[in-house]
Amino acid sequence: MTPRARPATLETSAGSDGGEFGPKHWLWLFANAAIFGSAFLWISMSLRGFPAPIVAFGRVTLGGAALAMLPAARRRIDRTDWPRVVIVGIAGQGGPALLFAMAEQRISSALTGMLVSSVPTATVVIAAILTRVAPSRRRIFGLVVGTCGVILLVSPALGDASAKPSGIVMVLIAVLGYGLSASLYVPLQQKYGAVPVATWALAVGAVLLTPLAAPAIGDIEWRLDSVVALSILGVLGTGIGRAMLITFMGRVGAARGSIIAYLVPIMALVLGVAALDETVKTLQVAGVAVALMGGWLVSRNE
Image (cartoon, rainbow, N blue to C red; front, side):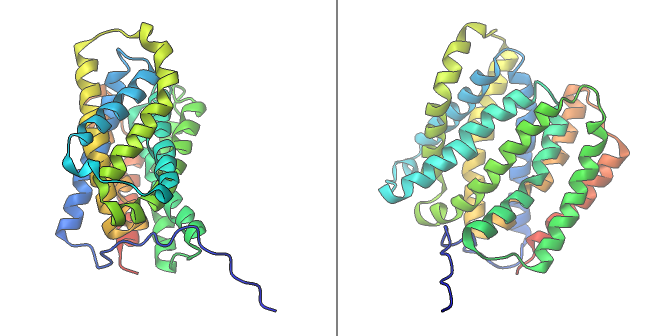
C-alpha cells in the first residue's frame, strides 16, 4: 500500500504575479533595499542613547502605531489565521528587532547588512519544507551563487577582532526568523493585504518586548540624534518598510521577494562608510556583485 504524502503546512509561498521582473519590480526592490539597508545605520545611531531592548520595543511600537492610523489596518483577521500572525510577530518582528539591536553592539552595521544577505537561502529552504515543493535547479544555482557572494562579503569582516561571534550568531538567528516569516506573509497578504498583517504582527512584537524594555527605561540617555534615528527606524524602516515588503512578497512570492536581502548590503556598506567611518575591502565589493548575480537568477520566472 502506497503511504499517503504528508500534507504541506502552507497552501502556497508563490506570489500572485509569477511573470518576469520588469522595471516596476526592480524599482520596488531597490526602494525596499534603501529602507532596510539604512535601518542598520538608524539602529547604530539609536543605540547611542537607548539600550537595545528600548530600541527594539520602540521601533516595532512606532511602526505599528504608524500603520494603525491607516484605514486598511482595521481589517479583521480570521481566528484561524491568528497563529500565523503571532508567529510572524515573534519570528519576523519582535525577535529580529531585539537580535539586531543586540548584535550591533558586537558587530558593525555593514557586517550586519551583509549577513542579512543569507535571507533568500533561508527563505527558499524553509518554503520548500513548509510547502513540500522543491525549488528548481536554476533557483538552487542562483542561491549557490548568492551564497558565494555572501561568503565573499562576510569573510574579511570575520577576521576583524572587533566582530564578536555572538553578534554574528544573533543575526543568523534573525535571518531564520525572516525566512520563516516570508513564507507566512504570502498567503496572509493575498487574503488580507499587507497593512493589517504588518500592523498586528508589530503589535504582537511590541507585547513580546514589553517585559524586556521596561527594566531598561532607567538606562536611557536622551539624545536628539538617537530620538530622531529611532523615529525614522520605527515609522519608515519598520512600519512602512515592512508593509511594502509584505506587499511585494505577496505579489512575487517568498523566494523571489526575499532577494531584496541581496541588495541591502549595498546600502548598508555605503551608509556604514559615509556615516560611521567603517571600511570596506575590495573582496566585499566583489561579493556584492556576485550576490546580485545570484539574486537575478533567483528572480527569474520558474
